[in-house]
Length: 161
Image 1 (tube, rainbow, N blue to C red):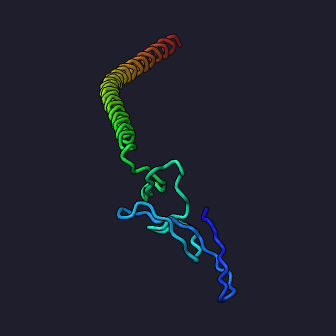
Image 2: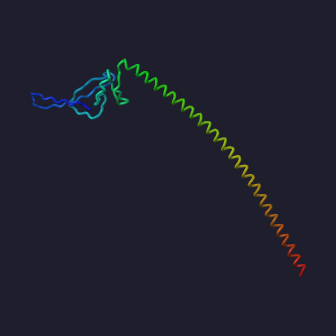
Image 3: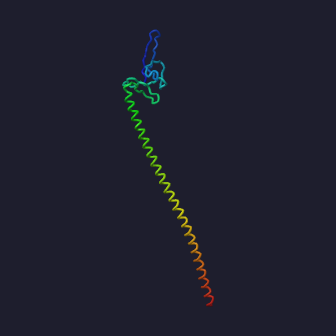
């Protein structure tokens, strides 16, 4: 990512390696820097990756971690991109509002259906109670009738003896 340059100083016979980094902030959008220090990741305002050579006036966008164009010619393009983004966001908001309205309608329909089902269950429970009471009364009447018939049969058999 960074360029290395090796310099030999004749006085000291030492090899000095320098690295190329890029300075970018609001005051100084782009400056090439040389340093003997090794930097392995971006450290504000130093950037280790060079900008795209096609950028006329590069500046590092620290929020998005990328180089951007700051020349006046690119402002028109950037305004168009922003306008397109705003349009897409408005469409998304509209779609979300429609979905919310649909959800509200579905919730209302579900609530109505649940209320109707609850009323039907209550009516069924009342009918089951009435039916149960009727069956109990019929069972008692049948048992009373059965006892009465048994008593008459025993009485007739007892008379016959």
